[in-house]
Image (cartoon, rainbow, N blue to C red):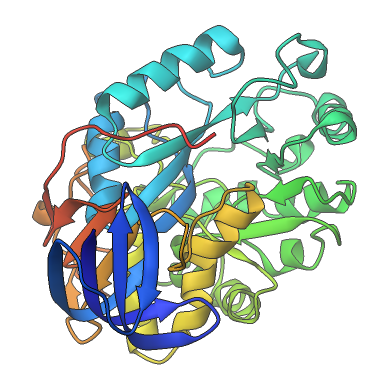
Length: 404
């Protein structure tokens, strides 16, 4: 048994000085005193590993933007020990064959554990594998689809699913593509797409709303649904991020939207933190027709740990949003420092806030809207008891497993 001793976040109890025993990738014991084969006295605070249920690792199809190796290394360096990859790769993850192919690719490259989302397409619920495919969830996009089909698909899946339906909730009738001369033009093109979409969604405990971006949308989230928010919709807005590089779907909004979403996040009304890590190359972002998306899986937790350090967010709320809540939403027993759960955790020095430096990040996109923002990166990150990252250096190759 390997023993880790120091100040740790224990679910329901807060920070306590304890010994954590790890055997076969699981937490075998949490006690005041433990003896083991190895004994590590750590400096700082031990927190559960983060679980990012919304990433785009671009593999297969777009490895010049990202692949499972670079994306998972970014995750590991940022304290994220498990992710769920979205289905809009090339080809889309839309059937059993494409699912198995992506699963094989992820298992051969990923440093962190993973799940895979499956795209909602016509007749999804009629497929023979609908009830058996080991997917994390279904994902519904509003692109290239009529509004009638979009809401019809949502209702059909919600009526028959045993997994969450994650929706990119922008109304197809209110997503316009007028030419962009400045970043705010993209916001104008999608001004009411989110609230109009949410107003038309049914209330279901299986419904999960991805990347909330507006105060109006927040107020229209169906009662039984869960939701998530990303750091860029909490911290960035049209005043502090004006470059078209910051084009993202759904768009950046106003300071008021930041404030209202952050208040809802603090209270737990928005239960889950996710990154929507969506990397593109610098050349693509600065072309005449830049794609939407921001990298974020490596900076998500460090930025929010800094928010805790600065007194704007409670550590208890962050731990729940980054670890416990996403695991619970997807029906997994993980995200807590308790006996029997997966030994995924990070060690952080809450006093070590440093500027984000682009040359220290791992994504192939090679840019970030948060360059020089203050952040607290973990000193060590463990996946199933194995050290996978230390001070930004990746310590393991591969090893990730499908959680579902």
